[in-house]
Amino acid sequence: MKRIKIITLIVGICVALASCNSWNNMNKTGQGAILGAGGGAALGSIIGAIAGNTGVGAAIGTAVGAGTGAIVGHRMDKVRKQAEEQLKNAEVVTVKDANGLDAVKVTFSSGILFATNKYDLTLASKSELNRLVNIMKQNTDVCIDVQGYTDSTGNDAINNPLSVNRAQAVANYLTANGVQYSQMKNVNGYGSSNPVADNSTEAGRQKNRRVEVYLYASQAMINSAQQQAQ
Image (tube, rainbow, N blue to C red; front, top):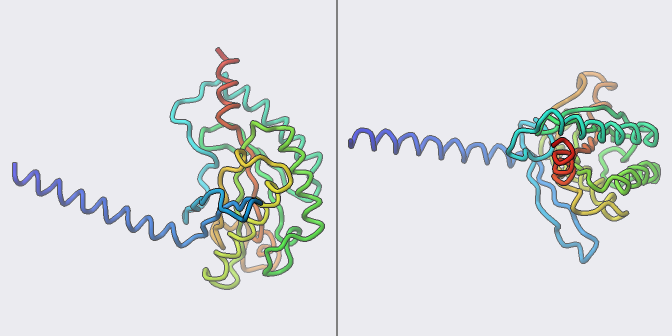
């Protein structure tokens, strides 16, 4: 019996150490907070994972039926078409969220949004983001995640905060111009992780300097779809 207790204790210590190590690694990426207009108070602090995006949104904890998935997919397809029609300077594609449901990924080149090594939005970028605000106002049961990325030039001490600040700038602009705070769920900065192109070329580095905005079904939309599917 004592031997079993000792083994159990050792396993518990190993798990605890692994958890601490995971937390330290997670802190190597940026941690974003959406700032509200009222006194600059933090609305919330949302932590980005160093492993990168493995599915946006939060899993609802229960399996989503095929009927529910089809209804949500139809709705998100309309959102995607709106984004394609209105966002002329962004790449728009369909992806999957953490629940395996259709979501919309909107990618803005950092060159469109910001000057080099800056995180202040340009006038041209504000015009583009205003179109995204209009889309979100028409779809109040859609949630948003914002993720910032850099190329591999420079080091993490520069890239991680820059990626956070750029994602933060986009999120703050959206909420300041009418997107509901309840729609804005996660704001993350991943630095140079998760490149989408070859960092050894200028064209590749330009693609890697980006802000990704994910639009996905809220719990309210999923609940509504489940009721319709019954």
